[in-house]
Image (cartoon, rainbow, N blue to C red; front, side, top):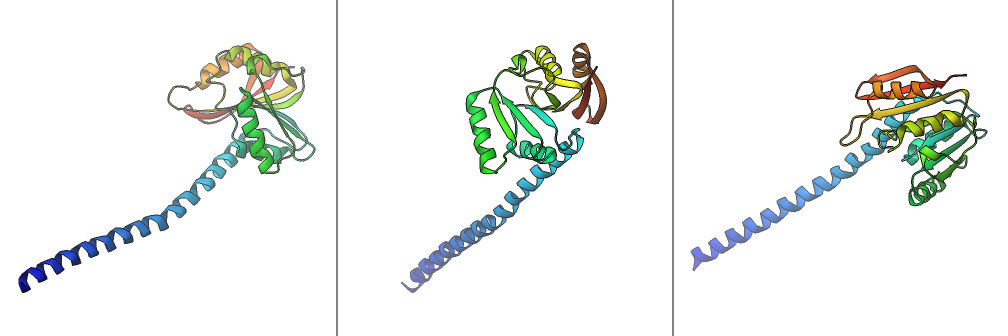
Length: 207
């Protein structure tokens, strides 16, 4: 009997030890998770800062951004143009427009107006904007050439279009293709940043 009791106690001890190890491992993983998550906003902010540094933005400008648009980036653009500037964002659906508008209200961003519409048929006046922005937005446009015509139309004389693209599954607009299509609508490439697979190209509307 004594041997059996000792064996049972040994088994119970092993079970308890295993439970302690499992709980300790869970605790350590949980304690590390917030630290990893906290890096995500920092990386996103750094990415936004890098893009904003490539855009020809100045205080007081009127800016048009073609969606899908990231709320954090839109907020950064709004800050760059300041209280005397204005940012208009065109989203493809009403749902996306309402979602973005809600995020901007939560962030107390006041100088942004979110619209819904088709980039290839912009219901906006001619020669209205100083800058137009397309961040990972042109590659998926079904009528991209028409959208470029519309962007050229709503830009003021010597206004600028900034296009940022990066390689991703299913959609990518090569820089050479973009330059050819932009040139066809009267947009001259003035500046390029990045690599062929992740770039920002800036175009100027010819007078």
